[in-house]
Image (cartoon, rainbow, N blue to C red; front, side, top):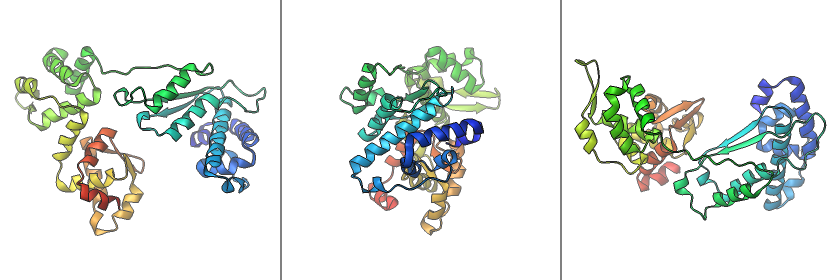
Length: 330
């Protein structure tokens, strides 16, 4: 809604508002409660309708699902620009969320009042999931099979694998600022140990430097490495193992600050942390998080502190003592 209100012409925004009001009717009020920024398109003159508040939870959910589908249908047909919804880590989505996504995909082009000014629907859902965490009985695959059998849905399945050997050579050559002829042997070892996983490659190189197996030579004026030790170095089971070792090397105060942030999920609003920091127990947490931002563990996005990857968040959270987890969450 922010993007539409800021980047779409006033005339098109007015057209969208008119179509949304026609499609949503008095129920627009209930959608605004879920999407407050929708007022930037519809305006503030939205009447309350208390009917839905007296309905059962199931009926309310169905009504909200319907309203969201109407919203998507109108927005995706009001201009020639595509509407793209990107959803990450779908292997963790619950059934209610997957049902809503299915409604967007299967129903949002139906039951909308059309006119000569409406464009063909251009709505794309891009979702990612870890195939190693999704078996044949997973709820996600059941929904994907429904998409495959639906005539109105065009499904493209892309298998994203690690980079190949040549790609790894290019990555390491660029990262170390050295020609490929000097990094070829190192690249081949790293590729074999990481299977070309880009995050794994990055963290593996960071771990080599932290462990002293890669270092800067003042004499050579470049990075050098102990190729024999690297070649015999044990391979971690996954990226989380590397991240866990990296976190364990952090000072206790840093580890505590990261643990506090991890209790909020992958990201936490700085304004929430400011409330916590008013107590002595959490004093200094924000300053510490800002200090470790350059370590690749956590970064800032607007007012949020965001863990660099969900595996990073998982590694930090798993290190919290069982007794301390309850205390921190409380």
